[in-house]
Image (cartoon, rainbow, N blue to C red; front, side):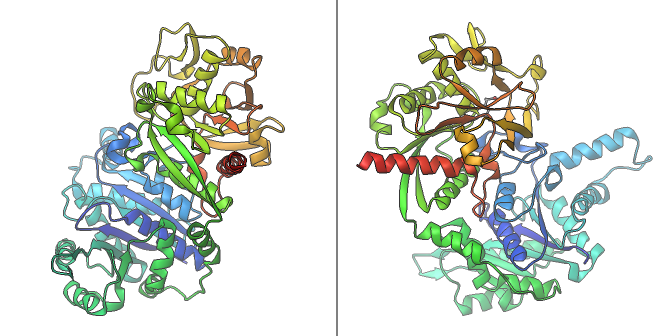
Length: 536
Ligand code: GLN
């Protein structure tokens, strides 16, 4: 079957949840037995989001092949079986980088290089690049219709349908239908304007996803259909829901997947979504709950820890528990009363991060976890802080530090990766993506994974200083995971605790609601155990 394409655009305002809608459509198509892949185009000029602050753009999601991508790719992987790569996320910067390289090489044979056709051709080739063997490819265009930046992408997808034919590509446009309390009415005008904008550049949407806080009444749907030139059944309510995992189920109830099949002229196949429904039921009716302190530096903006947030929820699903995450700003922990903030917690997690801000607070929190035997989970910077804490407070290396924070330290327990010495540029200069790791028998890690060889995704510039870590082993630190050549420390543990584990990689990128990550599953199990002990 030749690949069919679903293009998703957004209008009126940003943050309507286009990424989740794309991922949910992917889920629904997979549950009808089609193979899917998802792709995102971002109209900004950065080559990738790797150099952007989490406050600007939320989390940087890392793929298996080590590409730093938009956080929507995380939704794609969590909702479907798609494994994303560098070819699944393009920015304007990346498209232009490729064109300029070709131009310098002389590939254009003297032609004047222009937005149309060169940029649009480049975009169309990027779309086709991941289509092989896939039934349905879902392509999300970032930004909002009407932005100058997104025009080349919209032009490219307009041409694309012309190239492949009407039944092989459809356009889904997501808009906002606000409820104005003062008059007690749902307003369709923003949707009308947004669709008009889209039609002005030659794209007639086939389906409208209307984000709203209530079910759209029939007459509103009728009005939108009439003004926007779409069929009434193709006006879909995308109502706010309690959990993001409910979105596919809600959209299915609205009949979205059936309309997509019809529009794309796809054969009807039964839908099997029982496993997903079970996930949502478990989230809605958990058997117990657990309180986790997340001591990080970007906590006021939850999108900065998107995958982590989800992975903790998955750990909860695996244990039929609701995970209440208490976001604690590490900087405020430096001098604060830890007991007051942490005493009622069943577990403490220190996530990844860059730069010195908040590190002292994280080290304080880790010491608290170790001394009070509260289950602790450290991720990337969290591992580095745990090593510093142990070196300083248990091994007597009072000056122990990471060269990221104190290059003058006499005990550089964490230092820059050898291959990065002398490299000052920031873009894509890290140990990135998947690397294998060997686990030690009967460690917390081994018990969680159930195997001794794993592969996880990385994103760091600094690493554990092996020589000093080996000294620390004599004082009780356990190195339970390392690279097969023994060069990199990947996991450390404290065996005399209920659960105390920190890893250099980011396990959160590989957790899914249907397949919760082993480390999150076992961390939450330990936290529940601690909770029941504390109650007794
Ligand atoms: N800043 C640390 C490093 O670069 C940790 C990075 C992270 O937590 N992702 O190694």
